[in-house]
Length: 185
Image (cartoon, rainbow, N blue to C red):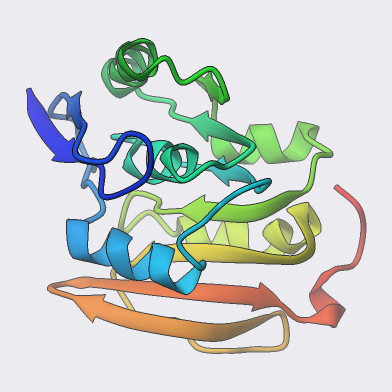
């Protein structure tokens, strides 16, 4: 089993174990530190969605920092089972872990989130499908965190408010432009 360490909060330094799986890449430690610096360290009261939970590092890190609730989606069986094991290990009662497809979940979900984490498998054009629908799932002043194999640029729908690069990974914090928030989900 592979492992990743949580950075801060009540579960600081706790280890999450996860299996090998195609396309599964844990968000690097320093990238998670940067992300949570951008988000203000404290997640108290925030409701989050982790669309491609994988290792669970982003979702469990948010919960460790006092997020109100995190919904974690993972379609692949082995990583999903590892998420459930880590949930039990941490007694993460505020984690709602589902074995689900991101697009199907979004099509049937009306909840809005303060933070959406989106780190989809690379080279499968997930962002082309997701970015047009995600604004409708953000709460007022909500933000979208995206990891990709290329840099994102601001456009009519999204403003890149922070970005960085670590190795081959580009990471971004985005806010929806008013024109992108068309309908409720």
